[in-house]
Length: 145
Image 1 (tube, one colour):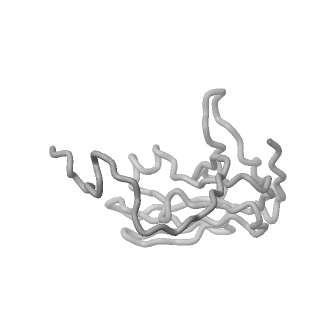
Image 2 (tube, rainbow, N blue to C red):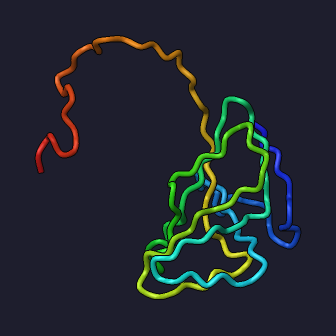
């Protein structure tokens, strides 16, 4: 698979990259022009300065970085976010501060990760009855504690 990437306003930042040989996701960098102070419970839209072109049968999933979530309570809303194969605009991240103090996000900080996945587009068939299973419609804790 090949993914084309275009810098929009991140020429001074590294391209997204795998930080270890076993990493599943590419780390993505914040491309804000000024420090972003994110208050407790506040959400902000963070630019990445990049756009991508994916193959038609793929999506990019944007996920939070676990270290930021654990240490500071910083995470992403709409997680995982989906970048569709026909989207060519700048990737932006909806960051929220669930921590107990404000957080200052600096340009160039690794703030999210991007994972690629194949997309299956099944034929959708409307029916009046679905086949039965042992589970049926049980959900939300139906198997007990």
